Length: 171
Image 1: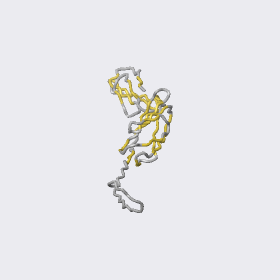
Image 2: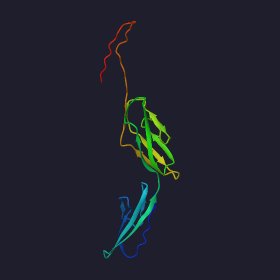
Image 3: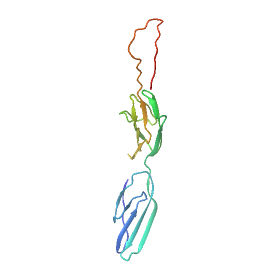
Image 4: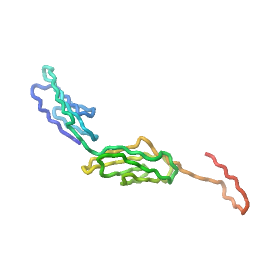
């Protein structure tokens, strides 16, 4: 949300300090500010005049943004190829979902299940959106390791009924 603030201070003001409540400030007279996340923000303005007199005005919860927010989890972070992982969204103010599983496959389901088909490490992402087209991107701090399972029993051998064979495994 981009908001423009108007200064209505009078007198010989020499310094303006706007605090937008999201750890950012501005020294412009009439600043515009981009709020990146959902939430309520207190906005304050400190003015200093040419006699170094200071005056402050603070508006509690002046900006309220009710965009989508949340997080997600998945059932396991280490699987064999072709095994499935369930993804569970824990979100608010959300109307649409776009899951990026990190392997070139996407889903619009709210809580999908996905099978990875090749060994690698994947970092899933969820993009949520509300009816006002506000989006929020959620990246997992965890990754999913898919182990590519290869079985090699050695050279091809012809066996007859009653023959035995010895298989050894490593790894």
